Image 1 (tube, rainbow, N blue to C red):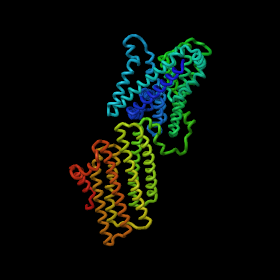
Image 2: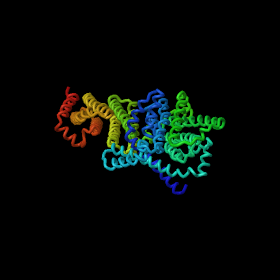
Image 3: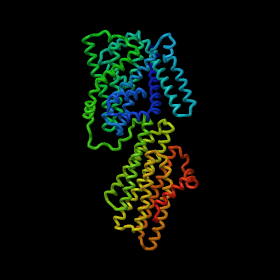
Image 4: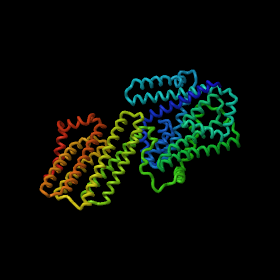
Length: 582
């Protein structure tokens, strides 16, 4: 084997890894959100969990990616640790699909059918179609499918290059000596572990073993230990990926690692017993790429079936390794590993922003109660909620900036933009709620209170703002355009109420029925209420934009207030509902 064969091998490895990266990214963008929906429906049924984990991994071509996704869902509270065991074990089976695809390279024959299914025949066509889709299509979905085809083609070209580079090794005495050494099961496991850890991919490591098989000197006795070590190495990768997760997320990564360690331990013991006691000839049988794919799948299936009865013990063992803490980090909500699958990252941000919206509504309603009847605990609750919402804005905003650096579909890109605007609106609403609570605190500290007329008027605008906040939160969390279209009319009524209440208060000041201090507090409360309703209007516009009802918010609002009959009807309805003259 010459230095040029080594260069070809390294180039093949590079193409192989790049092809896997492109393929995984493109599939993740298109299927990531769907995978989330599927995994959310996992039940406590062990077999169903294994089937789902297998199917998901077969689609996205990475057991590590599936497990990291599951860790993220556990981290986010979407699924429980117990229900995650099945999918994690299934992920180990699903990853063997890659080996079967790579084994297509070993197909040979003169018949038309065999030549047709050989990758050398159809992969160039896939590469051409993929390149055309990427270069000439403007639709993200079509371009992603092009990337999937091109990624698969590059992966197969890389596999072919590795196989061709390895062919001269069949006559190398040194290579035969190395493989003979690896027939020692312990050395084979160690070599496989190092190979997977270096490549950061069990599929890529198995692919290299398949490429080596073209030499004809790879046998069952040295291929099986390599496969065992490769899978333990894959567990280490997932273990490192789970370091940023919460306690149950870390336990899930340990389930993956322990499962693969138990697989290797059990199989290693059986292999040693068979090898050194029975000395069977079949261990010396050479295997090709298909044989390695069979070994890989059989190894996974055997050990998964073996461990099904011990799900609960596996979970309990991880709880002993990763011990519970008295206080867990509350805002460990956005898993960095989701960034590898942007649709999942965007979906998680949407869920958290919904939580933020509900917190904002609670903050506003509590602030109104502080003005009605001052309570020190309620005032403190408003301050705490406002601080919590600030943390939400900071963490979601920073995470969205990272997400936006990824290649996003048009829909996800619009969602990211909407989220960035919305978290700012919710944060500003909570600021105004805190101002209102502080106004109530000032009234209590100074021992002053509003007149009966002022109290009655405040109750009317409080009710209107409560209503517009409820509509905004509901429209946002449901992304419901039918609810959103009602908000602007009610926001206009709140504006009118603010002006009317301010005029009434000025009359009371002139008549001496109200002090100057009360006048300032009253005006400040009205301003904050009006600003809250303005932000509700902004949220409504973002919902309408997401539903493609609106393209230019300012022009839409201008036209709405002057020409839209539904707006006029809703405005009259709300004006009557919140009239001061009853």
